[in-house]
Image (cartoon, rainbow, N blue to C red; front, side, top):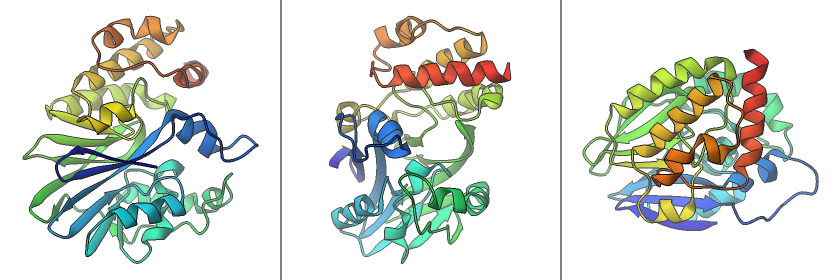
Length: 273
């Protein structure tokens, strides 16, 4: 685990992209989250902390709590995917908030999540619905519902500083297509996301050196649009060819582990075409 500080009052808790495995058999932790690299975040001010996603395991989440000098901790879950909710048990004594669809789907999928490899057991479910506006000390945070990557996404927006905590709505270099039949909807939502005109974008899956030095610009949204549009058109070229422009512009960065993600995305989109 690496503690990064991309902006004043924002901490990132990063793990992965180091080639290490925790299990011998194929599993979601090693072959997904750690391979790609993942960050969860906390917004901190005035003795309060808003934790955005609870990372990959309870021990990691406990480490996150140790880094927070906060008398009051609130958790917001971005969406239902296992790499964002696996550590929630460490915050069982806190308010755990989520969008209504996230709460519903976690309840429906609880048995499967608790039986995953590695298991997330017990899965702690949200205790309430995330409000439109949250206050963390003097920092105003807006919770925005977006249908990108997952229909139940909640993104966090700091309007006074134009900082977007984007979870999996964008990734560096490409998104994982979890809902291949909804790419048209995701593209429309990318337009709405870009209309926020964010100055800083902090994704869950990105390059640690970029997150540590202040995050991404709006170009990562355009790169995601380029990629999804190519998938819809049936483009099966290698990533470096599809993304030649965004890579040249420095909006995103190559990471070899995403070649397998691209292959899976092409297959998933082809299966619903």
